[in-house]
Amino acid sequence: MTKAGTPSVAISVAQHGKILWEEGFGWADRENRVPATPHTVYLLASTSKPITATGLMVLVEAGKVELDRPIDDYLGPVRLQARIGDATQATVRRVANHTAGLPMHHQIFYSGEPRPAIGTTLQHYGNLITAPGERFEYSNLGYGALEAVIAQVSEQPFDEFMRARVFAKLGMTHTSVGRDDALKDYIAVAYDDTDARIPLYSVDTLGAGGMYSSVHDLARFGMLHLQDRVADQARILSDASLVEMHRPTSRHYSGQGYGIGWAVRPRADGYSEVSHGGNLPGVHSIYRLVPSEHIVVSLLSNKSGDFDISDGIVDEVLKILLPKRKADQESEEEAAAPKPAFTPPPALLGRWSGTVHTYQSEVPITLEFLECGQVHAKIGSEFTALVSDVKFEDGWLSGNVIGSLGTDDIRRRHSNALSLSLKLRGTVMNGGVAAQARGLPGSIDSYLLTHWTTLKKL
Image (tube, rainbow, N blue to C red; front, side, top):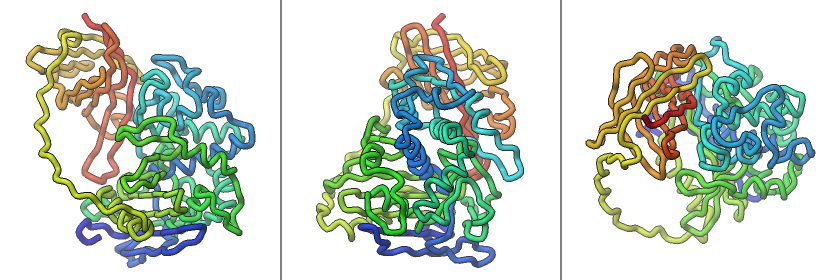
């Protein structure tokens, strides 16, 4: 903690339906000398996703939602817009496993700053920029859409449904969707990399990253997913539904699988693990289950984290709990080969012209690929700029460029950094141009807003 400059960490370990260890270290609030405890409440960031998915499965078991039907069937007046492919193939399951075609998305709002309803966010950014089933693309928008499904189908606000049908039934007394005033005395202060307090904020996709919880409550939530019978918990899902959630139906960037709200991977020691992690300004979470051994380990912190450090802590815990663990095999790492310079294939050479479609306007875009490997971009009325970090892999072009798309959402954080993710399809390229603001490391001034883009070769 001292090395990483972390104000506090809370950890819990449970096995076979019993909490073996739970403890808080450091300060939940440095200035007021409030110590962290197992009941300290932290913003979960993306570890919210398996909890949202559990709420969804309650409705699936009730026969009110079918995983392999189009998600549009359950969104009421909101509809996803298929810029490519068939929107009817954007099923609930594909949204849950990040293969529906929705892009990356991240947007933060200060306390007191108007936060849009999830329906508005989906209207502005709910574009399918790849065909459903074509590609894994980790999307907070998807879990915002699942949040909207739960509210629409249950005819209850998302937070009320989750409190009544999940948290209360599992004995998760220190868990909420969004910041609950009833828990304000338990919520850890978030700190940035300069050790300054981060002002209160929220995200526009609560189902993706807007839940608060404690390591004690996460231990109890894990007991459900490990199919452990706990006397003071309701069995809100059948074992069959839990197995279905842990079944990988898509392939994550790193090669691990993804099911319904859970990343799934085989471990080097022969065990299988289901997990999730989360990171937002001033908060960090690690959540890992080993189903065969009925083990759940939770780690929460009030500072944006280094996953290598926090995963290392959890690994040390699991070394103790997994007696069959194989001895670590040390091997010399090969020196990383230098990355070759970008060389455009013949199909890319020349000029491409098209449009970035924002929710407020159409912005012209031109890309020019030169034989020397340079790529020039002109976006809107901006000066022509050089695209950096260019890559072309498996038909996908990526890179970064200076430019502005000029929407109200983008002006709110005043950024002119754009990233490209475009698929070559013959004489057409299409996909996303994402406006990004990162601010200082761990700062509040961050967003990632993806817009549908299509270009034709001239």
